[in-house]
Structure formats: C-alpha cells, structure tokens
Image (cartoon, rainbow, N blue to C red; front, top):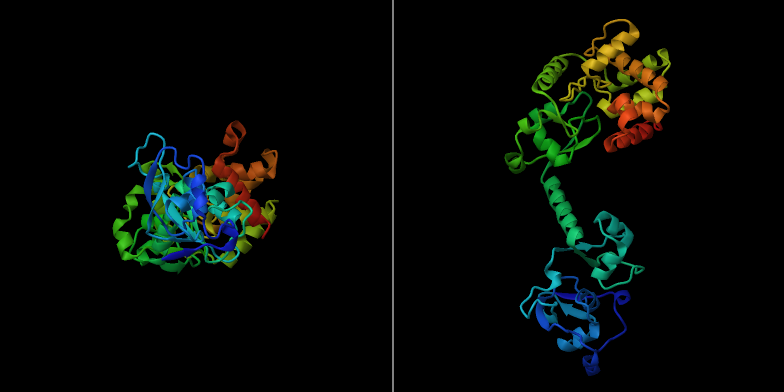
Amino acid sequence: MVIALPPATVAPMGVVPAAAFAHASPAPHGWTSYTVKRGDTLIGLAATFRTTPHALAAKNQITEARRLWAGATIQVPGRAGSGPKAAPRAARATATHTVRAGETLYDLAARYGTTVPALAKANGISSGSFIFPGQHLRLHGAAATKASQAKATSRARAASTAYTVRNGDTLLGVAARHSTTVAAIVKANGLRGTVIYSGQRLAIPSPAQRRTAPKATKLANTFAGRTYPDRVVSNAARNREILAARTVPTRTQTKSLIAATARRHGVDPRLALAVSMQESGWNQRQVSVANAVGIMQVIPSGGEWASSLVGRDLDLLKPQDNVTAGVVMLRALTRAADSEDEAIAGYYQGLSSVNQRGMFTDTKQYVANIKALKGRM
C-alpha cells in the first residue's frame, strides 16, 4: 500500500539530493532494520530515531520524499549499546487513528490520554498543523493502548443487542428476560452499580460474551466499589422480590408524588426530584445490594431516622412512605449543613463523614450530577 502525505506535513524537499549524506553522525550507534507501518512518514521516523529526513532518505536511497511503502524494510539509526540487532524504538505499542470530520489534534490528545506535542511528534507534524478527514495518525505507548481498548469495547458493543430500559425495569429483570446475568450486563456497559433508569440504552451481551462473563455471585455483594455483608445482600434480595410482585406508580405519578411531598415538608421539589432521579430513576422497585430501597433509595437505618423525624413508622416498601423518608432526610440535612452541596453530599456519603473527612471523589461527582439534574427539573 502506498502512503501519501498531505502537503502540510512534508518539508519542501521533493527529490532528495546525494549531498544528504553530508549530515554529521546521522547514526552514531550504527543502523538497524525497521518495517514501515501504515501512516509512517520520513519526518516522523526521523523524529523518532533522532536523525534527519535527508539522512534517512539518503541511507535508503529514497528519491521521492513524499512516499513510503507500508511493509517495506528500511534502515534506521540504532540505539546506544543496542548493537546492530537491537529492536528499534518504534517497536513499542503503536496504533493508528483515522481522522474524522471536525476532529483536531487537541480532541485526539484528550481522547487518548496524551499531549498535542507528543501526538504531533509521533506523526512528524507541528502542534499547530491542521489534520483532515481520512488522514492516518500514529499513536504510541499509553495512547495506543487506550485506542486498542476503545476498539475492543466498540467491537463488543457492536456484537451486543441494544435494549432501552422501560419504566419499572430492574437490572435483574432485564438480565432474566435476555437469559444473561446482571454481572454480564454491568460489564458490557461499564456500569458502576446496578441502578438503571427509564430511557437508558443498554448493550445486552451476545451469547459468546455471556459464556465468558463473570458469575453473578462475584458482583452480588458489591455496589459502587463497596462490599456488603451477606445478611444485607439477602435482605435486599427479599425486598426486591416483594416489590417485583407489587403494583408501583408510573414515573409520571411518582414525579407528582415527590413534588407534592417535598412542598408539604418545605423542601425544594426540584432538589427532591433530582435526588430521586439520580438514585432510582423514579423507580420504586429499585433495590441496591446495599438494601437501599425504592424511589429515594433509603437504607433501613435511614428509614428509622426518618421515622423519628415524622413521629411514625415508615414502610420503605410503600411509595408514599419511601418518598416521605427521603424528603424529610433532605430537609434535616439541608438545615444542618452549611450549604446545599454539603446537604446533597450528606445524602450520599453521610453528613458526619463529609464533615470529618471531606467529600470523596465519587461524592463530588454525585453532587455535580444532582445539581445538573436539578437545573433541568
């Protein structure tokens, strides 16, 4: 295959003169063999092997500097102490990216976890160069690894079946319906836990993927990076089964229930709606492995606290009581915290923990999510 360089990436050298041999010490440690790859350029290879395009062209009798043939073997400078048979530096992990319309070097550097200067150097261009659709750019090291992982994920998703989550769905129910496991769906979609919401798009693993997916028991007692005792997990499973057999309100009905309850207890309805959307997607059947139950994802100890706040026992398996528990907890947190951000963080992490240890990284993301959702309510 012939690789042609765009004019912007080529030095004005045209036909290389024989005088190019005059470069001082183009290969102080000798020469070694290198197989040209798709996207390689003389300028890029010169930068990689710390020589000049003219020296490479002259050594390999390349008279047309604008062309290299993928698969051809050329001579490049060796490394200090490597000897003539040492593997060239370019043998490290590499990958290529085909530029799409609208992409810039900055976009690609951010996507692949590298820098614009490093990306430019790998391709023998300047940091300010324009790139064009169809152009092939080389990626090195960690950037190449990240690109390979992204391609693998893309292929896996392409082999999967797409499913749009409906009102009342649980991850357990979706897994059972498609003859797969919760763990397989979590892995295929990169989920952090088992919470799903109406309208969410899920990739259901193909049969081949299901055979290699980890067993559900490996995930059964873990949620958001935390592991819970068997007793908590079994109680959560029991509550999940109870709610699966009950009639629950629709998302529209749930939204109205949350807003009305929030107004009744002096809580900003938008805040309550945002928290419940983030927690359960307004789904009363949602129960996490941590036994966080229902619309507001309240754990039993939280339910006991909320019951003391309202002066009666609250049944978290009942939609109205569940919403009431979450709302009065938000009211108490808002009054005790120094800011709304702290109150939101307290709902997720616990206000005492926030005050003593500050917000964890995932807590900060949770707060940001709630504030973004609140702005859309």
